[in-house]
Each structure stands twice: as structure tokens, then as C-alpha cells.
Length: 401
Image 1 (cartoon, rainbow, N blue to C red):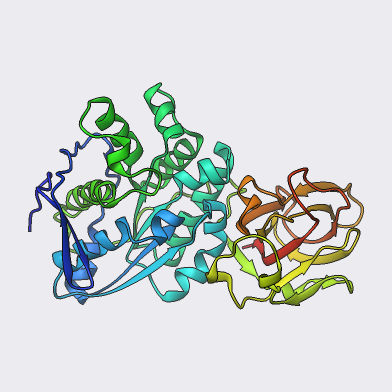
Image 2 (spheres, rainbow, N blue to C red):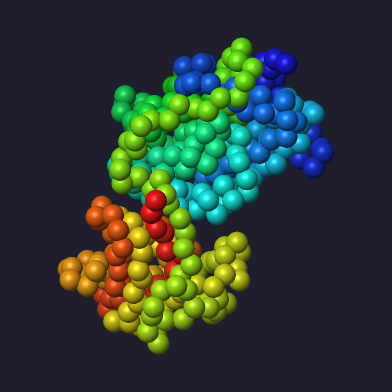
């Protein structure tokens, strides 16, 4: 079944009602979709087993009703006899570092994935502010885990857009998040959909506008452009004549030995802490700052008393924490294995001023692999923008084979 490269109208299936926009999307080029290897395994699974598990992991662009339900609708129409399981693992504000540590909990625990879409370029850029090295570690962490869990899984990475990233591309430069993700995708032979570059070219050629696209969180029109690119990439990848499902070729070693390829989120209740810490649901109604309901009812390890301490013993070469950092977010002092020097980690984020912002911060990396103990205390110092010294830990983030 063939689909036109240009959509005459934008149609979205919402609760069995087709909603259409009269605005045409522009012709999609093939310059910014990059087929590496093959995507035929997913097609064969969908056709031969009449079942398929398709997952989407990313930030708010994935979590919202955007490209994800459009792609899901396309797959259901393309394979009408297939019973699909769709997993929405989008969490607003989160980056690939968080994604690598939560992948098992949010995706792989749901069973073998046949096709997975990954989206973290924007959040690695504008939210986390990752350098290229950490963009590599996060993206490789996700891809290595998916391929280890199911070597047959097909993977597509999409680079969404913001104005800063597009400006760099317009200057023949590349945002560090996209550069890092592309390096990993080339190493693992992962197909990519470079929507950011396509959109930059479309706007430069006066074929569309940023306003029409819809901004960082695209509107229906912008998500239709993304979906058209993904459809084109899938059809190219499904054109293979192969009729047998075969494992993807795996590199002999990690691209970066410090990638979060064994990342996991751990229960904060296993830490040892003094009387100033509490493992409970915070009293959110009496804490300033907006709060996302997806975290309601979750027990956090939280405290705000300066000099109060906890210790956490872990295996591996790195340790992070997934926190909710709000207007009163504090600073942590961290020491590893008792005899090291204290170093400080600021939990406050520029988005913390009005929101209890979910973010993963690494406390330590590039240790010798093995067992370590982190001593963590709340500093009496605080960020100048913060109103307090609060620490609210959702999970510890470990990376151990």
C-alpha cells in the first residue's frame, strides 16, 4: 500500500472522528531521512504474527497528542489485521539521560519491542543543556538496552526542533544534542528522521513558517510533517525483499564506555538516612510551585534541613538521582567512598521557579567499576534564585552490568 509524499489535507483520527485541516503540508524531501540498515523486521512481525509492540519514548513532544497518535493511526491503517500494543513512554521535561535510566521500567518491562521511536533532541538541548558527550551517553544507553533486550527491534530516532537548533543548522553547524545522537545512530546503524534540518530548509525556502509549524510543541500541521517523514522512512525501510526476521548487527563494544547502557531507576527507600529525611508523599498542597499530577501519590525521599545526611551504596561507575526540583530546590554536597573530597550539585533548574521540575542529575561518573558508597548531605548554601534547601528524590539512577 503506497502513501503520497504530499498530504492534500491533514487528517487526524481522534476517538473515531476524523478531524481535517485545509492547510496542505509541503512536499517532503528525502534529504533528511536517513535509512541505515533495514526496518523490515517490524513489518515482518506485524504481517506474520498479526501482533506488534510499538513504543514511543521522549519528552513532552512524545507524551502529548502529536506525532505519536498520528504514527499509531498510520500503522493501524497500514496493517489492519495486526493487533498493536502501543506504549507511550513520553514524560514532559525529561532528557535522554533520564530516558536511559527509566527505559526498563517504562518500556522494556512491557515486553519485547518490535519498533521504537525515540525523541530527545530538543530536551537534551534546551532543557538538560547536555554537551555532546552526555547526549551520546543518554542515546547510546537507550539504544544499547533496546538491542540487548530484543536484537530484532527496529529503531527510529527523530530530531524535533527549536529556534536555537534551527539557527545553528542554518549556519552549517549542528546542535550538540543532534550531533551526539547522530554519532550513536551511525555507530549502531539506526535510522534517523532529521525533522529539525527539514524544517529549517522548508522555512529558508519559504515553503512554510515556524508559526504554521506550531513551535517547540508542534501543532497538527507540524506533527503531520513529522509523520509524513516517518511514513516515508518506514516505506523505504520496508522495501527490503528479505522474508526472514534477523537480528541487527551489534557493535563489538560500546561507543562510550561511560554510556548508561545498564541504566536503572532504584527505590530511594534503600538509602540509609538520618531523622531529618522522610520517605513519604510530600504535602504538595502546602508547597509552593505547580505540580504535575503524574507524580501524585508517589513516595519521595525528601528533606530540607542543612547538614542532614544520607548514604547510598551502589554498584557501577556512576550514580545519579531523579528529582523534582521546585522553587525551593537546594544544593547537595556529595562524597564517594568516605575518603574523597566533597563536591556540590545544584538541583535548581531555570524552570524550577514555578514548577517542581523532573530532572536527572549525575552525582558522580567515571568511577572504577565496582561497589561504592555515596555520602550525600544537604548544603546550607542555596541557589540565589531558590527560596529554600529542599531535596525531593524520586529515584536513584544506577548503571551496572
